[in-house]
Every structure is written in structure tokens, then in C-alpha cells.
Image 1 (tube, rainbow, N blue to C red):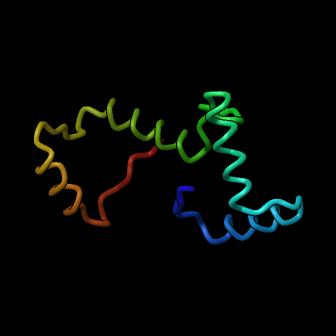
Image 2 (cartoon, rainbow, N blue to C red):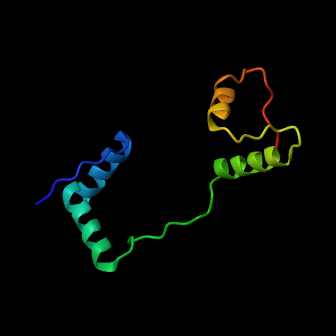
Length: 97
């Protein structure tokens, strides 16, 4: 049998372990059940929605505002972009959406 190692947030791991114990299933058993279901059905056993959360919506609006701002700097050189990002001072204003 193969072993799989995953990284998971400590709080999520603790709560997941508590849940599994409450239904009489080990964490390993739960992941085996998940993997077997995915293989059998060839899909995840739950829906993943593409509905963005509030933070992502705010980021979308900010990106749109930046793209429409004629004074926004564009880049064709990734190294220059990274240099500029690393050199941005805290005093520069953020874009308001």
C-alpha cells in the first residue's frame, strides 16, 4: 500500500480528525474513501463553484481600475516589473475602486 503525505492547516487537521473520530472513521480511512470515490466516479464528490469571494471581487475591481488608468505603467520586461514592485514605497497611493 502506498503512503501519501499532505500539508494541511493545523486547525483544519484538528477539526477534521475530530469529525472523523465522531463518525467512527480514521483520517486515513476518510482519505481512502475520498480517493476511491474520485477514481470510481472520475470527478470530485462535491461541487467547486467559481463564485469569487469578497476579497477576490475587490482585487478584480482594483485590476480593472489599474488597467483603465492611462498613467498606469505597463511592462514587457518581467525583471523590470519585479524591480519596480520591490522598490515601491509605502507612501505611494493605492488605487481606489
